[in-house]
Length: 424
Image (cartoon, rainbow, N blue to C red; front, side, top):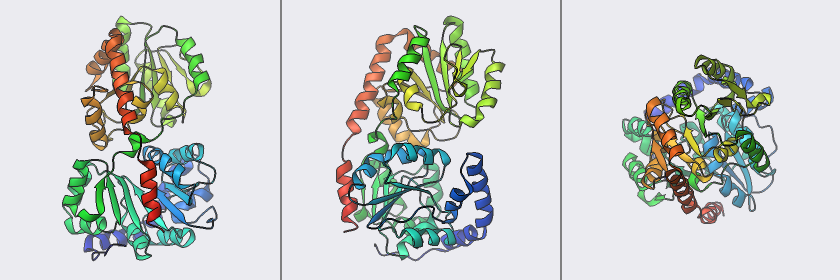
């Protein structure tokens, strides 16, 4: 373990507050997990109470908060599980569901402990990890401090902080430096991110640029038979999809679709909200725009103006079915979602301007002609219409995206060897 700097007062204060608010925080996260169908027993994993036995042998713990982060480490997990036991923690029910479907049975999933002393100690007592790999931006002070005190090597993989986070940490320079110096190794996504982390106090001897693991992760799974069936239903109708939309974005998407149907009355929109439990709210919005709709969850087919894909785990189907995809979380201040899955599946990517968490990815994709920024209803409808009207431009965008994604693949086995070397 690297020499740890003294723990600054703001981090001690954070720890005291986190410990004091543990019960309140747990009630909140437990309620949310319960709404998403997680059992009470599994909810208690967030307090550090394990629901699985620790297997014998060396164990690598990956923490990846969201679905996108979880998917980004799948190739690495697949290599490592052949040599060590692998434990993955996440914080959302959707990421837990993805892990259950996409990883080998021997890979263990648990919900991450709250970043309070009690839950973290219980978690570490039970699992006794030989290595902790934190993915992207999950820098939890209590977890890092307590794991470091036990001599557990710490890695920050695919490191990425939002501009907002960088600004916030820059106001606490001693705290940022103390946290970053806890890591034995930091692998940044880009040169720019590497420079930003160095400016915050990362050790130059323990940081390097390693590329974007999200870009090299496997694409979401296909459903060829179902895709063929839906393609037959759609026939020659022009199709586009709006995927991972958030409140405030569906209104823009639906208004754009109304415009498109003024000249293409047979146009179909596949609308895939980030949270399918908002389906009833979205149906009311569709009705308000005077559009007919069908719902995937009730067995409907895309025969009307809008097909509401209110199911989980089918984005790979929609990315491949629609030649043009608008990716949500980018017209409202969410920060954007992983664009690589869209281009891996061969769709032309449209995205809004509010995508600070994936800005580096978008810069690459836009430079290659694989992505198009839209800023509202008029921009969005014009972009979709232009691509439908210009098959050559559409195909050029799709090919550019696929080529960019293929160029990112590789290096997983080298990273796995480095991680295994840290635990002997």
